[in-house]
Image 1 (cartoon, rainbow, N blue to C red):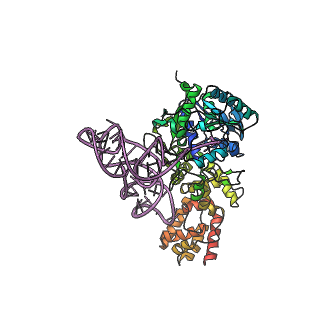
Image 2: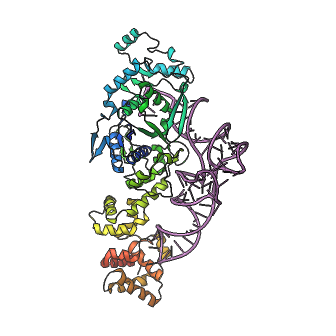
Image 3: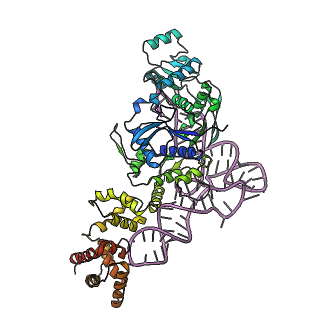
Length: 513
RNA sequence: GGUGCCAUCGUAUAACGGUUAGUACUCAAGAUUUUCAUUCUUGCAAUAGGGGUUCGAUUCCCCUUGGCACUACCA
């Protein structure tokens, strides 16, 4: 009795996958997994003019990176696109023949008609009549199969005249849409226009027709999509009815939109550029317009942080829990805890999530991820054991892996400059004298571990009443070049005896002995 | 303009019709520390406005206001 849960994510390959789209995909995925159902991916490329090369690969790669698994349709495996499932093809541009028969069905049943009005004619009409809408009130004044004889229609088509097929919306009817998140939504059919279902110019259906036909054929049980689709949901209900599919019509859930962090409106690519954060999962090089968009992955985000952050933008669990693994999300997710209002995109919270997840990764993993940054700064083939130690010492100070460089650079490169501010505050008149003496103490160290060094340096400071802070801070400046960094013995430990002593000597030479 | 959706701290959100309106991020202060940071503690800060219903409304209803979406031969 219970219908198998089958949901789909159906993006258009018109550019990089927007972060809001990623969230829609995530919610679909969580819902499917929770119910032991299927997550499908279908490409909606019915607008040939907006196609962007590489966009499809990008979308699939992004989902793969984030761990949003696809059970059926198109997916990426090891850099290759593969199609799985019995309901294909999964690209709408490859389903032309399928749509033909359904267009014909609607035409034959009188739910649709052929219209010859050119885009120019329609534009003129709209300019002439304010609020012009192609519907029951106006369709009889237009050039279509309702006003032209069947013979003439055939002549026009045979002549090669371009036409579209429009859905014939019956007026004066309250159309009910049951939404899982918003409840009952009622719209009167008078405000709906006779939507174009198919265009002969490129022999492709429009979104509305393709979407309904595919969801039906692919046995989709729940349509979970962005709120921007809510106004056209009644049209979709009408289409299901016209096809006679109302009994298996999927349930709808319209998700709140992701809004700009400041001001008003939907989050857009421009906001990311303007405010300095990515709005796309992966970096994207648009071959069509030549633009490059930054991505979360390239900015140093961990996929689990992006998932967690996105999951909580519009959804909240029952308690105060904020950190969720994917498995926990699958368990806890529920459409009736999805909020109804749009969520402003708070980038700061995203940073915090990344910080949290960074701490959860092992030092070895982080060291590996740190490699490209090191290389970019001229550090080739470093000792990975050392990198891991250094990363472990500093990871709690950063939100992103690349930021590790500013925390650890002195481990790799001896300071040549000494920060003015630190010098002013921490390099005292007696510092050269202290450092000269310290050098002797260090050189006489029987071994080079933190305990031993602490055991000989501290008593020496106390004996001369130099003051721990004064000596240690000057020492730190010699090693780091500034008043920052991890615990001093952790630094000497990594640097080793020879390098530590060399750095103190170099500092004395530069800052005056 | 029309239609629809929505409304709790700056942000994301919690609160069977009964709570001192909670939590997290951000911000501020303090503590810890041989530096910087981390960490910990404390603090600032909200039910858009007006009517109802009710013993009692953040919660239910209506109006106002505001925000958003849609209004294509785009999705």
